[in-house]
Image (cartoon, rainbow, N blue to C red; front, side, top):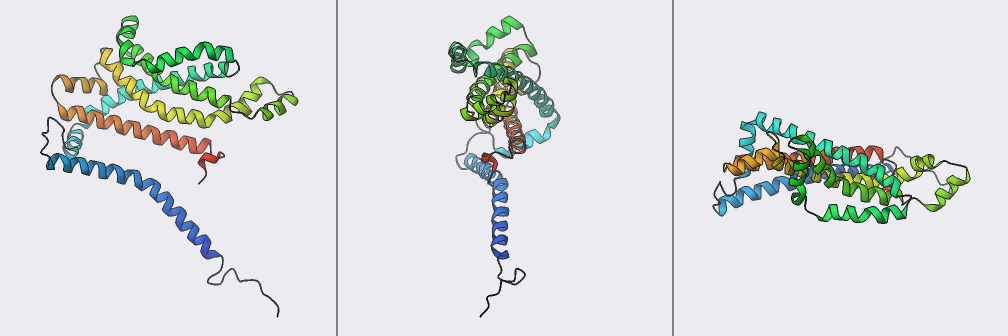
Length: 279
């Protein structure tokens, strides 16, 4: 009896497992998109219900519906202040990234420099920003400069630590191989060290997003700002405006979430070759 090859077009052929795999992939992708939205929705619904069940006063903790209604009723106000804070946070984020990458590239090649600089980095990390924020205002005056400086300091620490670790994580055998073919230090950095450091750098970027917004808001508290979400929170606190206070907090949360989504998208595009981006 002669065996015959299965007909790939027939029903019940190996196409079925592939279809099942495609369905699972579609379900997985849908769950990635839907799960965060569902989680936030359930959280807000629970918040709404708790304020009603426990009869929490609006001036103590407004309901999400009243906060969203307040934002919708004064969209221009929140949009203008969000634009100011976002610009300050972006500048501090960019300055921190640029300086940290240069310093990390230097100390990644020198243990002595690392031992000299890391104690200063640790001090900057463990000292609360609010403790020395007034000093920056005294040195630089009111306005944008102290805000960007404070934001850059809080963002610089995760960038520096993660970039240094990543630049040193290259396989030594690859470095020796590159040197054996007379590769320059710049070629080793661009082709080996930097690609190896990219996952760490993107991890630092996601951490630095929240720190950048925090630094910008805190800077607005001290630097005499007349716009920005930090200024909006300060005014709301001084004049007992809970809806404005929580509205500003909501907008800050949305800005941070959108920034992280953007960074994650860039990471997926840049690191499409890396194991961390495979499903």
